[in-house]
Length: 348
Image (tube, rainbow, N blue to C red; front, side):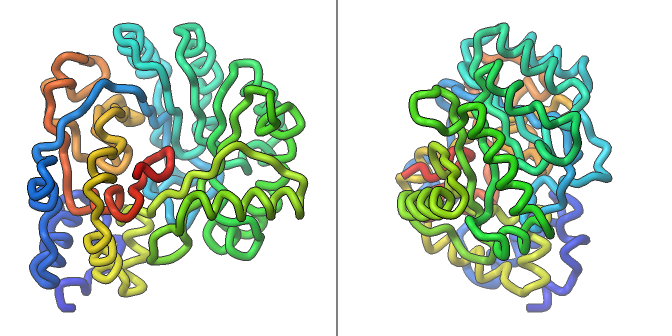
């Protein structure tokens, strides 16, 4: 396909180039634009419901460089949320009754103000959820007490674990990642996380390693629970199966492996109106490391700001955001395929 000859890096370098690529694929394969598909099922324009989650990306710095990372995070990334921007987030949160704050990155724990931020959010009486890559806990002595810190503040821990074996995990996330992840899970279990009756929630995230959608979440959860308990005596609460969205590094992989058009066609074919009605952008507001506001974490990576007069956390206006139309594009097919996909797993 002539239009796909540019390198993955060039194509993923900007939202404009990405939009052009997607439009070319739509024309060649006769795939319907996402907004057209949503209109057919009565969901366009897509509108928000009452916000339940304020998801905050506190920085793109990470101790890992994962092949599927839609944030393009890594040790060399310098984008870090400042304490001043965190305070703006706290000010905005105090104006609302949003019950959950979802902290993500990169490795959110690498932000120098991470612990202060967790403590301040907790003071506002909101549930704190941290997306932990597990290996950060064992990466350096200064992070070894994270399980105790999480426990003290009742943090819900959501951790990525591509598979319950070393070969598949390390292939996606780097050599030695699986062993370090097992060590971290044992440390979390030791303080009560995932243990029945503890109230300390430990959930795992599964992303497929290739150009395919995840299998049924319930079946995957049973497999993970059985394998991790049998081989490592590890327990956890739930497994979230998340579809890889064709942006950033995963987009690079799809283009370089000549799987982009085929993968997008799979997502379009599997479009599910029930999943479309439950997409996470409807009850989530996403905050970028610099304070920009987005409908979701994926739009954030494509620099697709909310369609509202309130586009930065300093100008947070809950009423204006409630009236917005959610910004959609072809990558949104990833969240509406099959059983659907969200940061909390399947939705339908």
